[in-house]
Image (cartoon, rainbow, N blue to C red; front, side):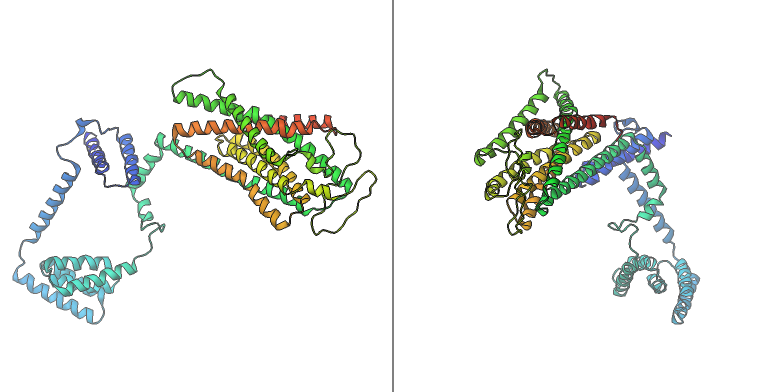
Length: 531
């Protein structure tokens, strides 16, 4: 066992020397590091254990062994054949030539082989094994032509035969198993040494932990890509469907407006749970991890402060947009669905149609009693400036919501966030689609707007996933700051964009509170589901 450990130590020392030479690529060096760890684990040795060192390094031992082998071959072939052996070898060569003439290649090879055994110093016997090439045994033919050139290096005929055999060998060579860079995977898999090394590698706890982490990251990445595609499809459909449905009956309008309002309240409950049950605890945990990495402690509520900074940043962005718009906003306010602009909470019975007719549509008339009429001022309220501000506001929110998804590392919290984002963004997209329809935008231009806005959440998710590729402490700090800002965005959306608007409306107030609590309960209950 001691000699085995010495041999393993010599191999490890050789691998270390190769890594230190600087002639290997980074990938090759990583492979050697894994091989060294496997050898140290399998044989219980370490490169630091110099008691296992021998007087010669592994390359020196190998060079000495190969030199001795060459010397033995030279000694064995140095004895000159007798006259009888020379004559017999010539006769065998002649018999081989006769067999070549009748294309009996196997018999010719046999005669030439016997001639070589009697007189291995005659280069002609080696070169006459052209019969091997005729039998498609090109690799053997190449080896014999090389031997002939060793005995007669200046012979042009031997050189030409060697080139022909090498070309034929390349043409006849089958595609490598697996087809990757000429690697013979079949040969590797049938090699006991390679399989033993692979088995030891897979049983290494560090390797198993690395593979588990990689698989987990892959699962999270796939889930984020599915979230990206799902939200994109929902938003795209939410914007374009109202553009297609240009006119509706009033009783259907009322019903759909009520469904949207209740869904909005349900989404508000979802965002309450998302903000306080998912995002805020995640930011707190991340802050604790960063402080531990910095080997410091802090009693200041950093997580809550970052959330409020995100809240104020979102308020600033929206108010900056409103400063240029100079009119009452809200990209998910249900006044979007009231073309007549009746004030929320008002007792007026005169509600306007759901959507104003678009340019080029046929004239439709509604009964004036209780329903009101479409007029030009309604279209003016949904003009280009308001539409542009709605697009900018929704896009800004979407990027931050996408960041929250892209930065998430926990599968359960990712699912919770996705549900909340999907509900909210779909409702916001429907509201934007109604404004586009009211402005009379063509379907082609509406499609361009819809694709642009729908790509904002995927953009945020992509940015978040890109940030996660930054290594170690920098990634943790950047991730916790952006997650805190995203939590502030959710806080703003919940209280300012959903609850303040919906609870101000006089319709279905208690039912809205019920849906608000239901949305919170659904998201809060997801923690009991095993993902």
